[in-house]
Image (cartoon, rainbow, N blue to C red):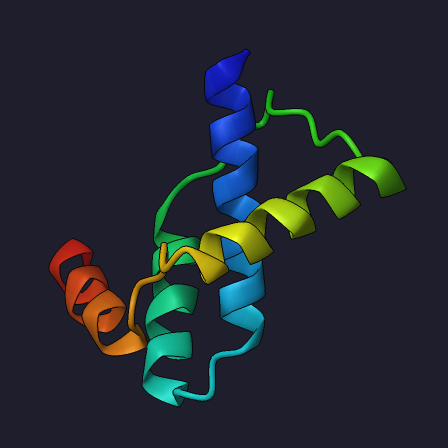
Length: 83
């Protein structure tokens, strides 16, 4: 279960950073990446409760405050390696 929490926290952090992107090239790379990876049809999407969302936001803010961030230019370079 610990791994599930880590994955969920990473997703929340990713979404928050994604929403702040201003780089069209990076957005295009993410779109290509998203559409290049097949989604398992048996994956179930479970909605979050308000409490879960708030916990994830708080964790993301703590991660940001402690410097656990990736600069967008570094992320672009890494994503280009994937595609």
